[in-house]
Length: 179
Image 1 (cartoon, one colour):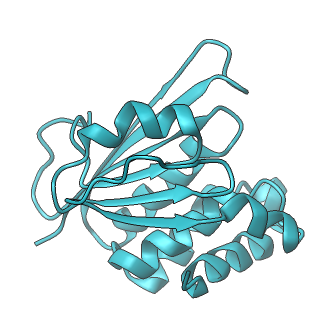
Image 2: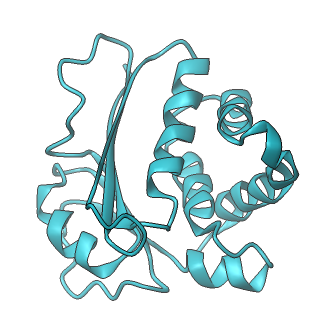
């Protein structure tokens, strides 16, 4: 049974809402029940942003994820704010370029991926979020591979189709990351 309660969190401008949309669209392509609930401060870029994503086989009772079983953190304040909310046995993926996790919970699986650094090294600035999505996919298979690609295609606007290939490359970098 599929019941992913995901929370993506970071600064505005890191693509937090976008990565949530890609995940939801991928789940939708697989015929799952989905919800996407954004939350961001009035200042947007540079302020805080997070989004709740649910992908399930059964109808979703609430789109708000209070206790995620998957938590993606892309900045230190978000990590500190939400790490205690992750359900025991949950998965935490953090951008280790930007986050130094001092207190690692023993009851969750923690994956550190230097996504921002990887994006910069591969001329994919601004795609650290998609690198993390690739790692999330590799760890969970929250959707089929075809649906992941379709979800991405659906979210990249027609006028920005030139960005589809770099996004696909970012997913592959995340999938291949073994550290």
